[in-house]
Length: 593
Ligand code: OXD
Ligand code: MN
Image (cartoon, rainbow, N blue to C red):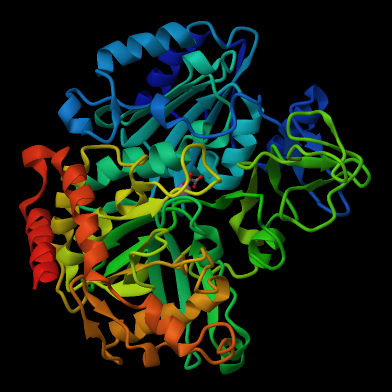
């Protein structure tokens, strides 16, 4: 039975029912009993495997088709009326043509199947930050993942009432045919359609599709921001809490930074780090003139390989109950899961991510897919911030951008002001690693880590950043920084230990925000004096000289960087904001001086 009388909801669902022709419709009410019945059904059909209840209570394993293991950027479309609205960094299709293509694929695809109607809230239900979505899906796996990643159920529809302000989402698993796989966003219609995939990033429509692509467009129109940023809190020994938002391209340790464990000396002094979010921030101005952020998600969709008790104990502990694992290795000896980098004892009696028998002592193949995932409830996280559910969000002191650069960017630098900070975000780039297909060490531009996630023209997005800053009192605006944990020596060794020691850098950042520490002005912005970063406890690993070397700004290297920036900016033609162009001219001038 329908859980709402909202006409816009009911008529849209009727239309989609006519299109896909399900044999029955089930509304997800958010009750544990309903979710439990779905879990049982998924186990019965083999869609999920129930794991050891004693070791991993409430946990399940799912395998996707081997052709369906990651987001598909070249099949992700932004369907705005004109190509210019989508901009040069997005794949575009005219909405009419795209709807026709998708409807032809989706038509009758639910025949003999159930349509699940998932009402969900991105953000705490009823918060002024939050937005409602409805996802139609024919996959129980999607329902159960959405029930972890978002707030689902009847209460969401009660809050929506008769409003038309909700995001339409249609997911059709179809035949999981990679040739007919499309992930399409229609920003002007508040609509997302995803066909022929069953992999999380493509089908959990609340996440990348809504909370970034559609929401970035909504934020542009409504005066707020949806960003690909974690949110963490540094609690100082005096009890003061400071919140930081940070954006990094993938494979730069975002989840690890969000759940950072302070070094021993910091712990002893009373420092604590808590997590508000590990992937997405929705940011808006509060009544006091400061910027506030929420994490619109309710869980972590994290990469499993490499997660272990040393790299990220908080993430690992988060996965020990109520978690869905996707494409990891199944240890048959104790009915648990394993992945590369979990420990040094791969199971010998196991099933790999493709569903084949696997012996970790002998096999040269991977047991878990490199992009295998855990979907874990945020409430499991031992370091979850008490402000996680705060409907008012948390006040942001600093915004941090970052990337992986072996030589160029210093360990940390501060932008001169807001507009310069927007420029710093716009030139973000990372050197590719062996983890992704393609050449290693190639610079990929990824402004604000939003390249695959910005739902409109990136030039308009940068202008939106500039406009947000213009509406802030500079005293109250977050200060903007760039970090690079990945500087290497000539032999290719990392020069900074990273992980928990990154708190030493965060501490300098927060001291700068409070005006407590001086900095050296360079061509690109302010860098720390080497004496101002605390090395207590790691002096053997990082000498003062090494630290000084990774704080250097080499003007010659930066001069070499400029043509790449200009080439990237040229794609935007006249739409490039004048303020951004002016920042580039200032950089060139500073480098020439
Ligand atoms: C993610 C991503 O899965 O950014 O969070 O790709
Ligand atoms: Mn992400």
